[in-house]
Length: 93
Image 1 (cartoon, rainbow, N blue to C red):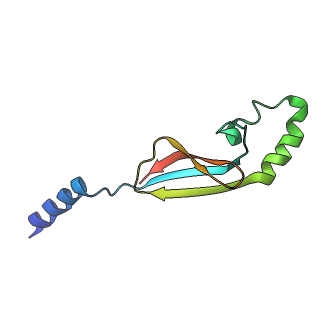
Image 2 (image 1 turned 90 degrees about the vertical axis):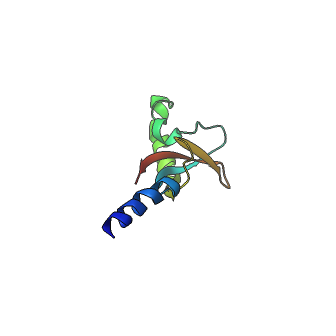
Image 3 (image 1 turned 30 degrees about the vertical axis):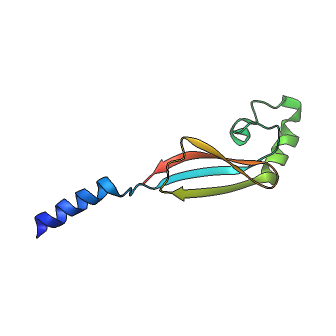
């Protein structure tokens, strides 16, 4: 009986995807901003504008996570009311 159970457990993994993909997003990117603006805003902002931009980024910071059995690539965009939400692959279980 143990042999049959072990065979069935291995067999089902081949036919049923049990992987869970975890995607993360830091917030909604406004039109005209790069997809990964939350990660790189310091590099694309002039030094004299960084303090104001930091305040702006903190006000629009709205992290969300998605867990799915469907692999959507290393990253994907999801349309939101004010722009696009950029999700990146954070891990797999």
